[in-house]
Length: 528
Image 1 (cartoon, helix red, strand yellow):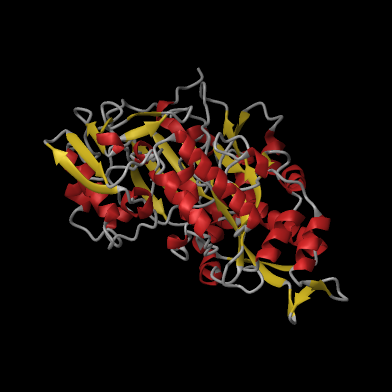
Image 2: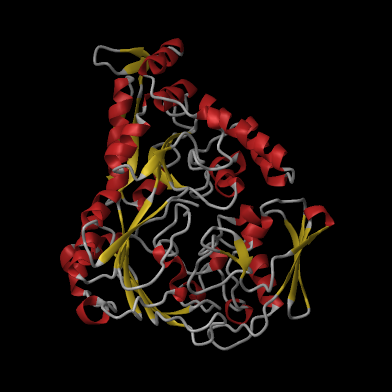
């Protein structure tokens, strides 16, 4: 998934005075002490709440359900479907039977036609869904009666079942609207455990328990997501009791470790920080510069100093403990080798220590999103490491509205990472067919060997063939990295200790709304 935009309105709302003025989004001194009402502080809000445009595509939406869902161990389980799919025709046909008695929050029944409508709309070229390629294997989806849905694929796709966590929307509501501009984007109706009751952009979203929820009435009756872009303000509001819980960077989460009334949760993730190196920029597009930067960065120091140990070095898009990770691509910092690579390519050091080639200095701008302290620290450390190799990186902060049109030529301190299967995160990050497609393939990376590996990994059914393909891909990224991969980040959460047996999942880049200890808030029980 792409780097999430933080709206300028959200940044404004994060200012201490403005946020304090709206300090009762459902919690606080009175409401927040109850186990049936929860107020969570998160750094950003979605652009849309419509699954047709990508919202909730990886599961855990509180408003919607998919045919399948994931449990605490990330194993697939039935949701709107009665059971896991029946797979036939050599992996080309998936048949789902719907659960009986499921209703949307407006009381209308779920049918197979709603599932067909959802997938066909997402796949329509007129729908602005940049994740469409994840469902590209679908040749046809059809309803068989009211309770059966059959997907026919163009080719076997080993990860297809995991893609059917996609939330299902009601055709009787969304079918009469433009999927890109309709009111469904901000006033959704689903089958999930909660109903959206209000959305003040840049301030908060409020949810109440869905009276028609097929899974039973949640004990937490009201859920509020307070949008607070500034990390320090979020921590202050949590400490004051204005929030029941929050997502926090590791250094701020650590300040709550001795708080008897709150509990800290740490979730491992596929969420990585990396610097995009645009192919079209004459400096960042140079393979020698890319390799030298990869060799110059001190990943271990970033984990220790920026993340307070809450993370792992990133040697590529897959974390080191992932079963698909190619163990032989781990590498240490080597400034001598970085210098040798640059020397051989004709990048010679000048009197100021900055290298140049054919009169062009080894210099480029690196943007990071305003207000994101963790990315700022990564960007500054990266620039410091690069300078030791003779590469001048100019760090600047800006809003996503400013950064996005510059991504073609300027580097960005980006965040990505998807769970479930290597295809999910790698294809959109690296495949040349998606170069410049929104936040997909932000670096406009173009490597035929990587494209071939991605296609093999996506279409193959044999696990060993897929493993060989992804091993090849990871080695190619060492030879010519379109991104400098820095760290995989553990997500930290602090929450009032009023509920029993809370857990976290392994998380993707996108977190806060659907991840954290509240990934299954509908199942929480009071600790009393």
